[in-house]
Each structure stands twice: as C-alpha cells, then as structure tokens.
Length: 445
Image 1 (cartoon, helix red, strand yellow):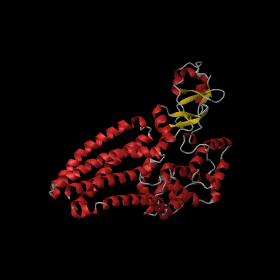
Image 2: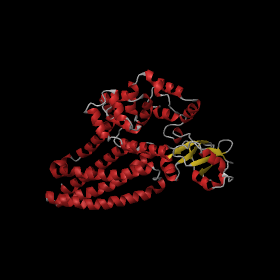
Image 3: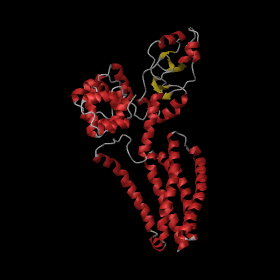
Image 4: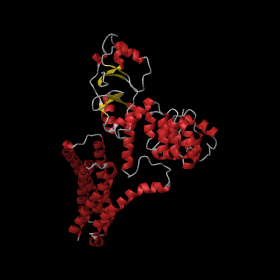
C-alpha cells in the first residue's frame, strides 16, 4: 500500500530521506508513476533533483509523461544528454506527443530516432492535428476485421492480447473505411458462421478534427462504450479514443478552466523560479489594477456625497460584494454550459429570463435584509431604503452580466474562464457603486 503522499513529502523535505540512491529506491519501490510524478512536483527544486537522480532510468520516461510541463522541463534540463538514449529506449508515439512541448529540438530528434517505423508513422499523422483536437491523441491499438468477417474470425482475434479499454471490434472495407462496430460480448452467444456485421451497433464515430473536450464529454463519456472509433473526412478509420484518455482530457480541460479563472497557467510549477512566477501572474494583476482604477474613478464622481454622508463609504463594500458573488455564481454556470456545448443562441433568451428571476428573487430577499440592518445600524430609514434598492439593482445587473459576458467572450473566441471574472467584477463594482452613490445623492442630500 502506498505511503500517504504528505507523509513521504515530509520525510524527503524535513527528515532528509533521499540523500542516497538506495533510500530513494526503497521509498519509491512499488509506487506507480502517477504517485512518483506527484511527489516530484511537490518537492522544492533541490530535493526534486536529488530524488530524480535516484529514480531508475527505465522508469524516468513514464514519470515524465505523468508530470506537468513546467516541473517536467526542470528535470529535462537537469538530465545529462548521454542518459537520454536509455531513457527513450521504449518510447512510443503517444509518449513523444505528450512530451513534445517540453523537449528541446535536439531531444525530440533523439526520441524520434528511438521510435520504430510504425510508431514514426503514427507520430507524423498525429502532429498534423493541433493538440486541442482528438486526432492528436488517438490510440492505434485496435481490434479490426474486414466487413465480411464471421464470428469465428472475431473469436480467433480475441485470443490475442486485447487492448485496454477495448470492448468492440471495428469492421472496415477494403479501403480501410469504417463500416460498423460490434461489441465483443455479443460474439460469445453467436453461431461461428454468423457474419459480424449482422450484430453491428448503430454507427457512432467521431472526426479527427473534433475538439478534445467535446469528444470526451459528449461522445465517449455518454456513448456507453469503452472507446469510440475516430475517422477522417473520408470515413477512413484512424484510431480510437478510449474512456481513460477521455477522462484525462476532461480533467486537464477543467484544470485549465480553474487556473485560467485566476489568470494562471495550469502547468505552473509549485516551486517555479520566483521571477518566472511573478512574470506569469503580473499581466492579470495589471489588468485588475486598471479595472480597479476605473471603479475608483466612478467613486470619485461622488466625492461630495461621500464627504457629507460617511455611512455610504462604510456600506459600499457590502454592495460590491453582493453583486460580485451573485455574478460569479451565474458566470460559473454559463462557463460550464459553454464548455459542454449546452449554451447556444437558441436557449440564451430562456436562460437569461431564468437568471433574471433568480437574481430578482435573491435581490429582493437580501436587499430587505441588508436594508433593515442598515436602518438599525445607522438609525436612518432613507439610508436603509437606498442600500436596499442598490443591492436589488446590482444583483439583477450581475445576473445579466453573468450570462452575457461569457457568451460574448466565447463568440469573440476569447476564453471566458480566463477573462470573464475580471470583466464581471468591474461591471458589478461600477454598477453597484453608481447605483448606491447615485441614489444616496438623490435621497440623502
């Protein structure tokens, strides 16, 4: 049983374990590559390099494949050039595709030379597609038979090694075009002389150019099959996308969404150099500063009001906070819907009306609560009414912004998860401050 990762991190960092190769081998013996990759990413750079040196060369490739790009690149740079021939000894096209963005050109050449002729062909075909398309990630481990094959030929095929997550035999014509899919379990109850095509399922395929997240979420995860055939525009069978690869692609997609919402790269190393981390995060801090100055400028328009009614300054953060939270809830829902292809121009109006009703209901409830609190706090009924109306207006406006901001960004081919929250916060701050201070000017002065 694997030792809990936090305990092993403490042993390597605090207790000094891992100063010699023998202790590293003992600690990592029996651990899978995902566990070792997570451990390396969790260690400060000095300790990480020491542990990396102690990992056997025949395991280094599989560990690198499981790591994020940034921490992986540090280990690649620290590895002597004369070790790569042995590290790449068993590399295949899928491994090289995973490492491609991290390897310098000289090492890509070394890895490519280590591939056999068939794997080189797979690699060349995959690199014709960008890494956000399913054609870049297809598996070529297939069970394939001619379209006129019989059950006995299918049973003979199953006596060989069955690829992981493979529950179907694919039938193709003489040109290699996909014809039909037959589930393996159906063969065992059929007569040997029966044709396989008579037991075929409804054809479900995906094109090589399909977006990876769409392919994974809408096709593989909902198909009821362990894998789906991938075909090109002429319906020629290229490979398959299995449920394990689909799940990995979806995990990476959602991790990108989460990190992008903070303006960060999902591959950033926990212990990346300070200068690099600061540079990566500086852009969105700068953008946020500009939006903050914009909100401050709107507040400055009501300087005279704030000087005369100090209570408005005390309550301003409440207005901004309520609008920001309400807007972010709607934004998160819409960004997820866009990612899954569930939000379209056809249902946008209905979605907007639903969110307006939710915003209106929550706005009325919480506006009354905050208005009553403000009344008893400052003993001023007009102040309570002002913040009550401002909260209601800002929550409704936040609901509208939460729907339209990500939708418009998506139409402009801008990732709404990356920039949507910054724009939404600016909108809710400005609307909230203008509504609150404007009403305050109107009723309290």
